[in-house]
Length: 411
Image (cartoon, rainbow, N blue to C red; front, side, top):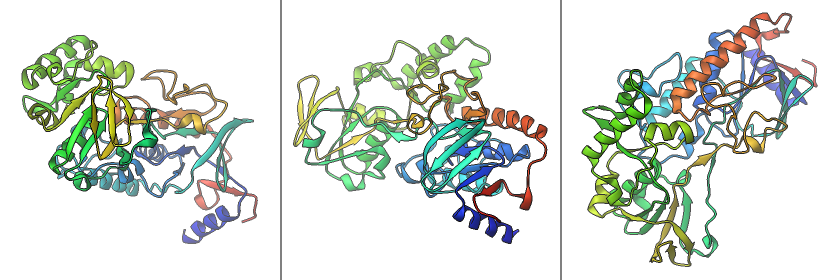
């Protein structure tokens, strides 16, 4: 087996292109790992191409230290293998990463790292996936780069004038380096709220920009997960009735958030999430800091100046640092060419639950706007669909039991 692996690696080093017998999966985050595991259960080999040097790179390299799962662990499990029993209800960043590494090890998933995909196209019945040093060919392509592949950097006048630090939350680790600083956090989603809270706990002075309406819900109601309650109620009640219930209880627990500058949308939280993908904020302590005045809510930014920011309401304040909690976006349009399965924003045109399958062997996982539950659902469907096709394919060369055939050089 070892000599076979050595042969394969030597072949990779020398080859001009590689024929992959199973699907090519682009991305080694939770979505890529989930679909690879489900494929292995179907007896289908696969090859994951990952641009970074580790699995779950967003979690490992671009998240802040205090991050925990916002939902209970049973709603964040990948298919076929759950979290360890001794993990807490809301696993930490480190625990989630260890779960991902254990998951990959259990299913013997070995991505090819440092393989940034430059361009991909369907040509004469084959998906041609080009990285910096190799081209991979397969009849199936699974896009698993997800909704959060690249940071969103808003276009605000004056960024280049600012003398202080400007960083995206993908670069933020802890509030310790911001002690006693006046910090502007642009964005009021879960990341913006948690970063503002973290800054408070490290004795910084955070100001949080609220540009749009936002739903803030307690993370738990009656000692149970708000999300879990919502999922249970949706089995029996209409969506809008469930939304009304959630908002009624949220107002009883949290009070009227409109008075804090956090105006609620007219559409309910679950309906809004389903339609737009905008996730409600699950409060883990930031709201009490807003009520106490330790986190100050500001209106939209008009312009960044040399020493601070001018706001839409005419106020101007000085800041030492600006943190952009402005979210992420798909990067699919930058590398997948000649395909109308995805929108210009890099999301499947067909909405959930049918956005997992395109034409010509193209699949998408991790684009449901429904978190890891949606990822798990799509991974199972994709593996079953490809597994059915795999069983009908005869006569493949499976020498050395490899999942690839090295072309361009003799073995």
